[in-house]
Length: 267
Image (cartoon, rainbow, N blue to C red; front, side, top):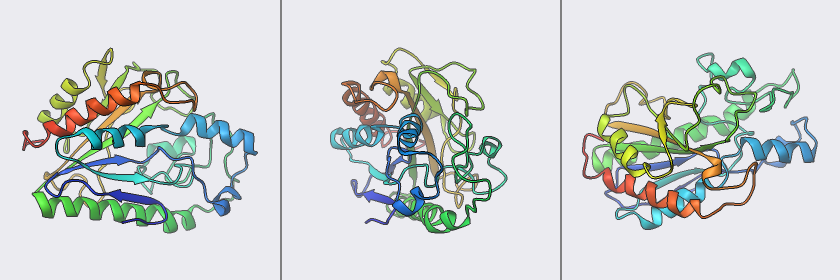
């Protein structure tokens, strides 16, 4: 089941878990690339900074080793095309640094697109279908199992980048992003246990919150969600370098979290 921008990878029919991997790709379609101001070398370096490299591999490793294979929803385009996890309107705080649903500024706050750029076509072409696809995937898990558990798989750089609005806080090896409505204590506890062996973890620092499709956000308690933010030095060389052995150990930890979900219906 594919579209131009995402892929839904089948898991076990009775798994409620949906691993969401929104920022792992570096792919930018040629017509979208034409609207970006950066030269090729500058764009490559921006992609090094902004891409959650190898997170799709971590999710794939977890899926292969979990007792009950989760479903995976993987963005196949770069977040420089659209960022599917932003609010598409004025609710998005990252608009303050030019990083709403369509970025107009870089990680270092320089111009990415012209001041006159109209984001509407990219929203219509990529953001809206992606959001609908994710909502449909959640609806399928609800229909099949009576609940949906979204685990958002991200990474972040060891040193803060200029675009970060809350970069002054602690930067633990693993950050767990939560939502007051959608993150039940059992799910958070299971994540703390699964990821407790990487040298430290914290909640909602340096990044907070988690992704839930707007159709369900703040409305449906059957939809649980948690964000896993992994500091990149845990598993790769920075910026944009090769993956290390940490990919396998992180995949095993994520699989342990996936396996804990069926035994915790409140998660």
